[in-house]
Amino acid sequence: TEYVIKNIQWTTGDNFTVELGRQQIEELISTWEIHERWLHWSEFLREEELKYSKRYHYRVRWSVPTRRKPIPRATASVYFVIEISKIKPATSPVEVFFTLESSRLIHR
Image 1 (cartoon, rainbow, N blue to C red):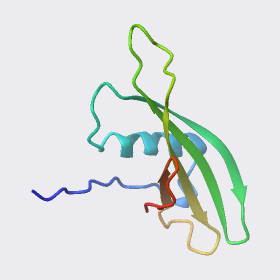
Image 2: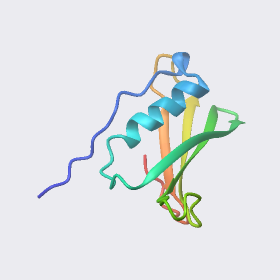
Image 3: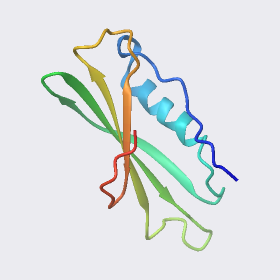
């Protein structure tokens, strides 16, 4: 069977806030098919000012806590960047990129 990638409607640059970005990342993650025992938490890391855009960096950490080990020894991270163009109209949607921990492949 063919896997269909689900997507969400991303906010525009003029409506963007750091918290809305985190909420939309959570909304995107909810479309992923991940076993229920994997838990995650997301956090805003930093804002980066570039010549033609602004980037907002986030991290989502995944782990499998258990009763015996509620604080997991190992985690896996997914890093997100939400980019707002300074050139495109403010009503344009933000661009979203993510990479998996220890991978160079950038997903858009």
